[in-house]
Image (tube, rainbow, N blue to C red):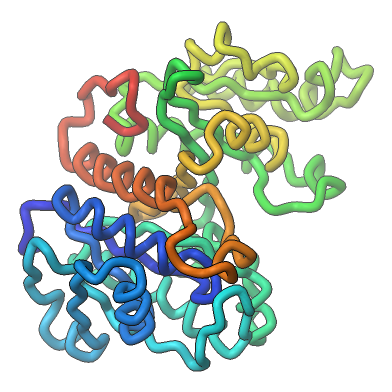
Length: 358
């Protein structure tokens, strides 16, 4: 990569939200730990950097120059910006569908930088799905788009948070289903898909997190995990058979556990990851414990991708610069860097009990 530091591609997200601001702040703060490469409109980022901190120094590079010469060298107190021009003037807090395609293009550039060996991993700031859809592009989210663009048959969404004063250990929560209407969840929980989900979690916890024998606790779908069929049969017909099949293949999967009691420290202390059946079942707990410090990680991709655990915060962006909290972006960048190091290191290393990927 031309650098002793991990090179992290950072897409700055929806320009009218807080994504560009937190990307700049986090990149500048962590420039001694990683080499951050921002992907966004270079002129807009330069203007924003001037308003945030006049010490921030940016070096723009066009996509044409990048593809011809590769990623250029960069001073330790300078951040590279790969220019991905916007189509319309940015008004903070106001969405403009004319910029939808430009936002999506930053993801394509980030993927290309990794595929070409210029960057080691990608971190994504929040984007606004509606802006991309209003631009005439069918788009359901980062996770699904990255899976399609990398030819990944199945990926898994996982959110994680580091240990803290009120959370004795790192917490990782993966999802069997992601952005589905609640009425569609039961039909989406199928044997093959759920088994492959467990396989992806097991493999990535070993390879990217350095956990040699990961323990995965699985929730039920229904209250009380179905209560022996009285409250639903998904546990009996699908979830428990998948767990047994996974265990016979060497995956330490356990459950199905009632979701309303599983998220207690006396149980979580023995789990490396919890697999929840649907979005709010798992993420409500994690975000309550760590909102603003959590990280969204996509498992099953042929690249490392992390993101923040929050949205575009348009209302906050509308109030002006200097108000956004970049903590989640900083954690996302650090975890991506740790995953890069872990993936390159011995697969049998022991993880730190206080970190997500150490």
